[in-house]
Image (cartoon, rainbow, N blue to C red; front, side, top):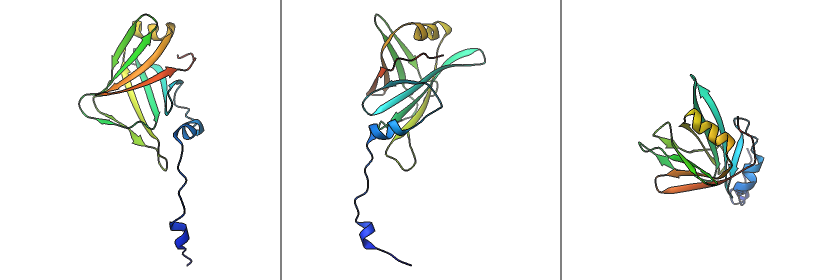
Length: 144
């Protein structure tokens, strides 16, 4: 059995979050927004006849919230829409063997709110976690 101390002292390759995110080929949603170190995937889905928003955040942001949940704000050119998370516990999990994190967060909404999101131009998307705000610039896309 061979063992080398030189392997212990080799510098480990540090991953760059933007490069890591660009390598991820996530097929579980529509790429909707991004900032310098995070990407959000967003889809409007329906369960039991009621619409909801399914979001996944992937990047370097990480937090854990109990009993408070978070809010999602759609900022339009002349208006805004604030939605509360479906679950009051929000947790980001580390992606195995990387320095990136991910979280799935769902939001309830009405049919009118869903139509507004589909039809109006979103200028910015903001998640608020207690005292932390995570803002995204929308990527031109068509969500269903």
